[in-house]
Image 1 (cartoon, one colour):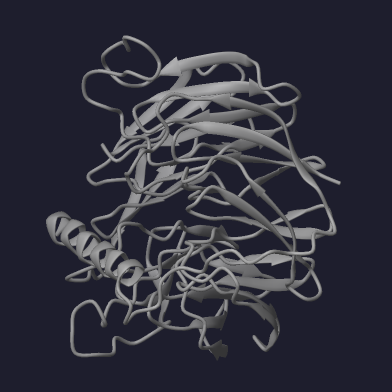
Image 2 (image 1 turned 135 degrees about the vertical axis):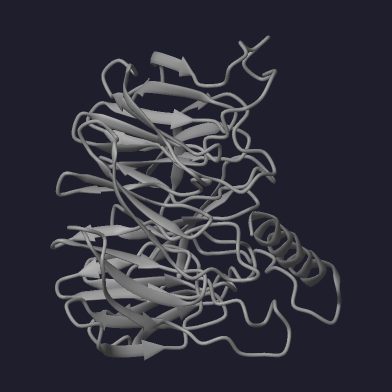
Length: 394
């Protein structure tokens, strides 16, 4: 099944490559001049290892107080001083020591996402099936869980448990104190799927998960039993690619609702306790949904940025200026929304209209795969090459 998912990912990538080169299929948007009303600038930058390169990655800085934690795929984890980007401590997870930081050797640790900080613990997931729990102050290991599948997303932590969603379809709950297994739940898997999994959400004694077959489900945290299951989107079309309906983004829990989006599908709001559908809209997405200032923000798989009413799903505004630029999910920065794209640009959108009001090129063709992370009045951004930037806007 792992082979099939990888093949599916390669095929899907081929579709997008063709889309960028054919005159018959929409290519990515060229950037049009804007009337900037704000000015963005880099306060400091740092280089962390080799980044993620051409690999699928959800590596993203974690900001905690005066510290920023950043990792590269090969296995380097670094704690940075938030004010200036200087290194406080670092740790290598790959088995072989590097010749130089940019020239690692041996088998990589394959860090796949994050890191994630919860309380005093730093969590590091790997494609090799390990989940590390570290002391965030020193980087020392608290425990390591060895799992029977790839971890390609972050864990969810809450109510005494750490819950992971493996690429082979298993949802596994671990004891947060020592990483020992508590239960596992096996979901239905798809013949072909995207290279990714939905990060679970732990809430009110349950675990909300999106599946590769286009479903939302809630598993009880006590015992791992299925509470309810509902379809986010049904497969349609004649080819396997057209019928892919992966729910890869994290379920967004707001009040008594859980909102999920599917690839090639829709965005649906469910009643958290019963699974009843509250509303659905034709917003196909694999990016994490965001609630910022009571607005639901969706980045579609075509990179349209949509602001919608979270209670009804009704569209407030839509920005189509960045189509097929592989735009990240938005982050709130000052009184704007900021997104990154695969060409190394940051774009700031007006909260009320979606108009682009500032733009900054960090490093040409150095892809930004994950959203900027708020850090006080600024945002911190990680690129595919391993560059980390602290960015301000005036």
